[in-house]
Length: 565
Image 1 (cartoon, rainbow, N blue to C red):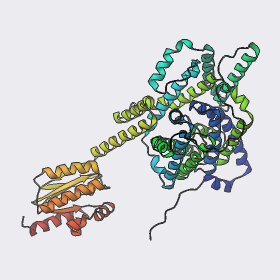
Image 2 (image 1 turned 180 degrees about the horizontal axis):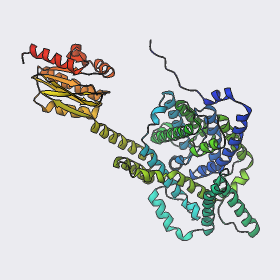
Image 3 (image 1 turned 45 degrees about the vertical axis):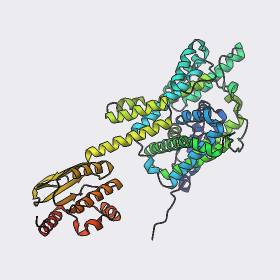
């Protein structure tokens, strides 16, 4: 009877509420309030930097944050918009508009749900580390470059999307720098950097926004100077609950838009999966828990399916807010739900205050986000590692900066796969033995020398028999003046892929056609089953597949007598 397919969906909230008490509830409320306060400036800043607006950022943090906490596979994960998506969202909005962004987000959400349904959560966590570091650093540089216009108060309305063209534009407009803007931006950065030295409980970004907003308000009301643009000058402010809306595509057909946005949706899904699972893994190490990666992916997917219908943007697990939740005592999903309630109250009642926030201050907040994302210390330490890892890291980073994240992840993955195959090929070896061979026991060389009968040669495959090694095997066996009896020793072959099976079959067919005999030695159970399914056993006979080289050599001697070598 075939095992039934099951979906690994087990939200942590149901487990944690079974053992819930007043003490945990009070800690969760306090942590949720603090995380909600931390999330206010970040949600607003990410929404604006993505090319949408403050309302979209807050809506995403509220809806996605609630779904991730209520249905996710982590006790403490906080979901919402993150800096990693800024570059992708901005590009999609510029090319396809808000309707295209909504379609891409929904598609990414569906992909995430399917990843969880088919239990790919554990596989995604094996993304090569140099790629993660590379595209994270590339995103950090890109975020930094998008904030220069607001930091310097250049007033450029149409900033080029291309990285190089963007900086050319900045340098061409340096003469129109607004010194008030630069001063406010630098002061915001200094406040964020200095706050931890005063108190680790107060979010530096929130303090910077409060101080700089109060300063600009006082400057305008007491001196009549309106030094810099504020959020309210540039964006429509939130004025209530978001309404349900169907994404509009304008003149483009839905199918055409889906085809054009498929690579971008895949990038959003992969980036969201990687970031959320990495955040969950880090939080597990801190609180001594264990998240369910497949449940987490499905919750992230559902969040990204729902938020576009309320004007939201892509969301994932946010490691900074998750760590803030942990550090302030949050231990169950209730804290994440409380954090969304705090954000909802801001959306409903504090729209006017949000509109007074100066844009250079938000630029300072995002510059510090990009600095913290850059991971320059990790890059410095990785530069002392292998050249292949360095190549993957910097290739991914440069492609992220100069082109886009989709290309960077694709090329980075291809590079990682190629280098991985090369490393496996370097550790795998094929040797041809005649006359005698030395036995090896448990990785140690033995003193036992086995005589190889006349007319017999042994091909020893040391390592996985996959497509890279299979080609080497084919070249080696086709170039030799082979003996009448050929033993393929496979005791160290942990697995064999379709290319390996194909090449082994060609080798056996050629040998049999030439009147030669083939014996397989030391085949493990998994490889034996693969060979059997491929129909290879029927060609050489099960009596010629033996467990040990001693038996294989004895069988070779028997065959040698039959053919009178």
